[in-house]
Amino acid sequence: MSSTNLSYRIFPLGDTAITIEFGSAINSSINNEVIARFQQLQQQPFRGMIEIVPAYCTLTVLYDIGKIKKEYPTGSSAFETVKKIIEERLAQPVEHINVGEHLVKIPVCYAEEFAWDIPQVAAKNNLTVEEVITLHQSIKYKVYMLGFLPGFAYMGEVDEKITMPRKTEPVPIAAGSVGIAGVQTGIYPFASPGGWQIIGRTPLKLFNVGRDEPVLLKAGDTVQFHAISIDEFHQQENDSLF
Image (cartoon, rainbow, N blue to C red; front, top):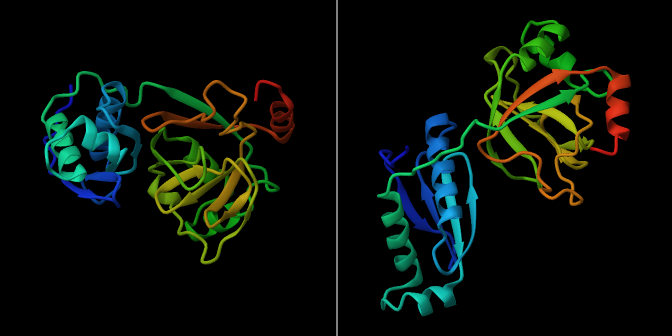
């Protein structure tokens, strides 16, 4: 059971959204609270709520201003009405929090043709390429949030021995590329310009509209990477299950 013992602040995000901020850092406990409240509002939406967007330490709730004024004729502004509803929800304990229960194992090919930046990651951290690969696989990562692109999962935290700053300028990145930026690791679901240091590629599709659940990873999931060969990569890439 989770209750909000964390301090927080609530502020408007434009005319039709409200943000609850629990902190300003990458922190697992704070993110657990965000995900718990995300699940609470998903399961018990209030009238006029449209969508909820969890992030590292914030939760943003989008609402229909017309429905809010109609459903809650308080005489207050829509923001003040939603703020009061949110505060009442935060005062309630959360009965269930399914954080980390869903483990997703993701195959990664760390071959040189896919791992453009792994030599630089190794050199900067005084490691061999093999040590970088071993360390990247050694941790079960938490999916903190989705963003940037549909299905792009921000995961952390990597072993401090393989942390790496973003590139100074974005470059074209292939779909499925696995990268590191600071203490985070992530996978590009689509080909896109990007600044993360690329250390491998997965044959899995992170976003596929043909699936019942188009997004493979969700906030709160746990991810573990495991190495595969180039032959295994191409076999799985061509597999209709992916």
